[in-house]
Length: 151
Picture 1 (cartoon, rainbow, N blue to C red):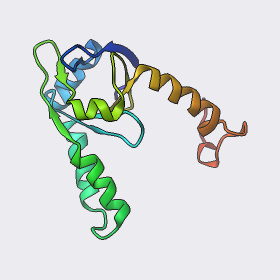
Picture 2: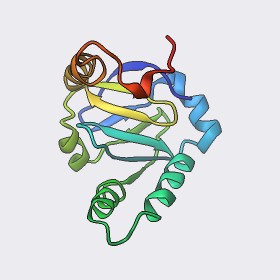
Picture 3: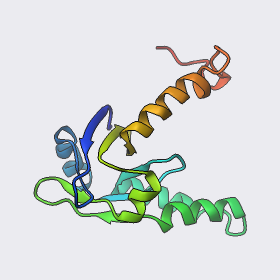
Picture 4: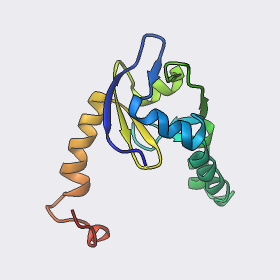
């Protein structure tokens, strides 16, 4: 399980270094084989290969003639790239993906359980505040789907 938030820098060549604390688990779970793709938010998603393959199989089962399913498949699979880690644990974020996510220099690397999200740090901060203000708390009450959560 990948948890937590790390602030990292995108280097001048467009590479990101996986934070050190995640490297052993990535080596164990997927031999550091990763897939990077766009997300439905203004960020990128980084998946260990086995997690991605499971998601890809689910996407492949979506109805072929459903336009929303086609769009989702095109978005996620069409932008997916394999990431090769170098000896320093870095991988190249292709320029088209950097542009789609608005990645500049400071990056928020966010653990999301079975994957990571990669945000421009300023975009992450804005999304975080908006999520608290609108998506989760909105009118001050939690949505019914959260009724059984205990913090």
